[in-house]
Image 1 (tube, rainbow, N blue to C red):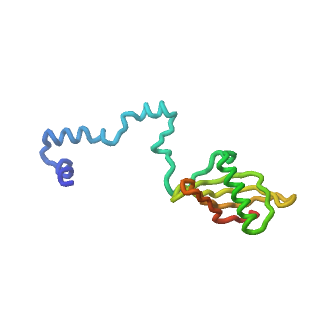
Image 2 (image 1 turned 90 degrees about the vertical axis):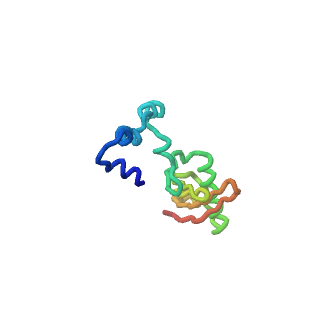
Image 3 (image 1 turned 180 degrees about the vertical axis):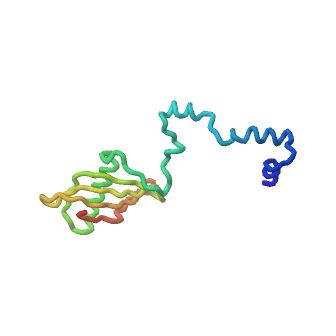
Length: 140
C-alpha cells in the first residue's frame, strides 16, 4: 500500500511513476466490452447472474418442474389438512438459491366448484431427495 501511495504522491516523477500513471486507466476498462456485447446481445453472465440468497422471478410457470412443485404443494396440503383441493395451475412464482432452493408460488386450485388462489412456500433439495411444503396459505 505504501508503494502505491508513494507512486501517486511522488513530487519527482520517475519512469516507474510515469508508467504507473499511464497504465492506471487500463486497469479499470474492459477491452473486450464491445465484443462481449456483440456476442451476447448485451447480456453479460457476470452482470445478470443469479445472486445466491436473492429472489428471482420464475419466467416459465408452465415448466414441468414448476408444475410438479405446484401439484406437490396442493397434495401435501390436502394430506396435512384433510382438504380436497384440486390443482389447476401455477400463476406466478419466485425462486431463491440458499441451502437448497426455496420456491414461493401462487397456485390456482379448485375446491369443489370454487376456484381460488393460494400461496405455497416450498423448500427443494434435489441432491438430497428432500422436498418440503413449508407453508400453504389461502385463499389469497
